[in-house]
Image 1 (cartoon, protein in one colour):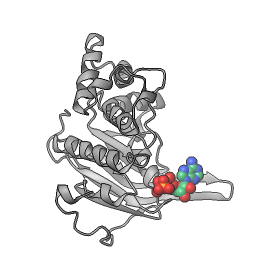
Image 2 (image 1 turned 60 degrees about the horizontal axis):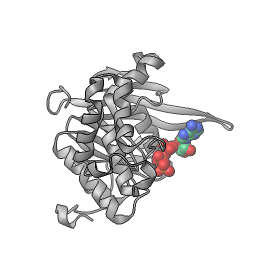
Image 3 (image 1 turned 120 degrees about the horizontal axis):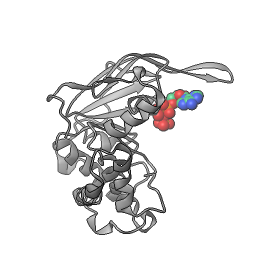
Image 4 (image 1 turned 30 degrees about the vertical axis):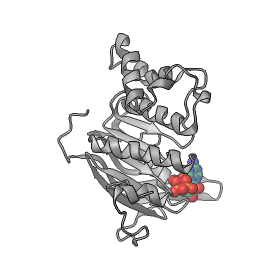
Length: 246
Ligand SMILES: Nc1ncnc2c1ncn2[C@@H]1O[C@H](COP(=O)(O)OP(=O)(O)OP(=O)(O)O)[C@@H](O)[C@H]1O
């Protein structure tokens, strides 16, 4: 995994604002956001629709840039990077998981998982398929490797997407509503997988609406109108033991 010392902040946001130009003028989606996430945390980002969760995640992923403030992930302040360096940085330092999986339909599952390795060129070409198969084994769908994505269930497709996100062994796994398109059984399975990966030391930031999903995280960050709520109300109650969580 990554070489960062245990508990060092792997994510830092300092005075971050994101302002969009909209027909009516300017819309402040994030304002004055400060956040530190230590290596090894599993953070659930929660909050009402429109509170800024996806905007925050996109800044962490380097998909978007802040209007103000600094975003530092895995030791890199992203504001200093050109677009091309940012794309290269992203391929090596963050793994992304989305609600709708976003697997390429014409590639097999194992080819989808190996694809980010081609871009980052960190793993020798001859070892990429082997590593992709190991990752599929890790997420429990090694037997689906040579199928096309549309032959898999939603839960299996999301497992494949998680394996793809881990392809370049990124310090941070970022997930935007990863269980939002799954039935309850697959949702539980994917959350267990995230909890397992976190137990192995992987830092995870997950945007979610789902109360049960929050119970798997080690910390909850609540967004309210573009801010982080300093004193969130207890909503979900005691998360309970793992067996009780779903
Ligand atoms: N590209 C954009 N241009 C203009 N406004 C935007 C843009 N992207 C997001 N917004 C606005 O910023 C606010 C925050 O959006 P964001 O998608 O981050 O919220 P969210 O908490 O993830 O919501 P949801 O839970 O519904 O996905 C919303 O009011 C949204 O309409």
